[in-house]
Image (cartoon, rainbow, N blue to C red; front, side, top):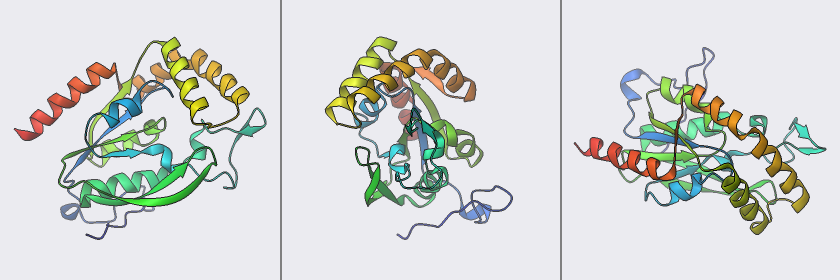
Length: 220
């Protein structure tokens, strides 16, 4: 099946297809939360198709990337391909298939691509810290099934984030520690902003319960 090309139009609409041709056959659960909160752990254990929104980062040579502490501020949504991510979710919802980039965080570059096929699944997940940037448009286009913000105690989030980043050699240790402290200090504010935007703050256990209930309703 060939993916449908969807682009932002002049009036801000995401589809230039007529309404009768854009009925979604699958809907997305957006999953966000602080880095290290357990988003990937949750999504990988669901058995459902998962889009990693981190794969839509721009390469580090992309013009105009914001700087912070004399390095690229990878926590800024300006480093992220908003339109590319949104179009991929729309293609998956309408056609069941999309070509997704593969991003390598240690080298700050896209290293390939992969084709995702939902194989008839009525629900898929999209996980990442920038899910907030596409929430309102997913809702407006009728492809949103739910929006979850994964939460765990702040010290746990800090520790798991640091251990993961060091293990994967994402960045040098000093910037990782500095970044981790900054995240921890601003975490309560981040949760408030996400809830205000429309996400539901849940634990990993509550997220699994939500997913079970949602799939049961889809089967009915």
